[in-house]
Length: 212
Image (cartoon, rainbow, N blue to C red):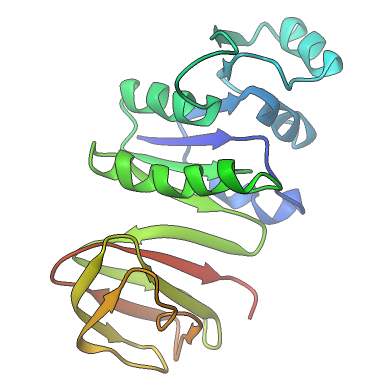
């Protein structure tokens, strides 16, 4: 089951992210992420959080549309975004897209990126997406759709990633190792409309730029 989560960060051109809603069975807003849903004309199934950053106007809309709320105190151990993802997992989602996951709070942005790792270990494949990029994890072998000339960056999210092989990228890797904290995997380029990345051990974050 696919879920879409709206967080309160930046999205930009809403028309560029509408495609991620296709096939979604569950739409959840994390606190102020509700503003993105409303601006796209979407009434979500649920809003999760402490409501401390939701505008008064949006709170009135929440009541008007009778949107289910799962409220938490402001002082809590988890972000609203993580709580929203937890709900999605409990509802049976095995795939989720997080929109508005990056913004002007680098601590929140980094936490949201790292949530991909913890939720993958629990069976939820999480993709972060914006108007011109997607971010997801690679462990094992993965085919990645793209277009010739688009940029694909590969960054280790474990201390060491070994046995990396790529196909369909301008700078090939053949049974190589990348270490966390290096930039070697930045800005590879699609040679066609599909690339393959395979690793033996470890985990990579892949960032695909939809506009080259």
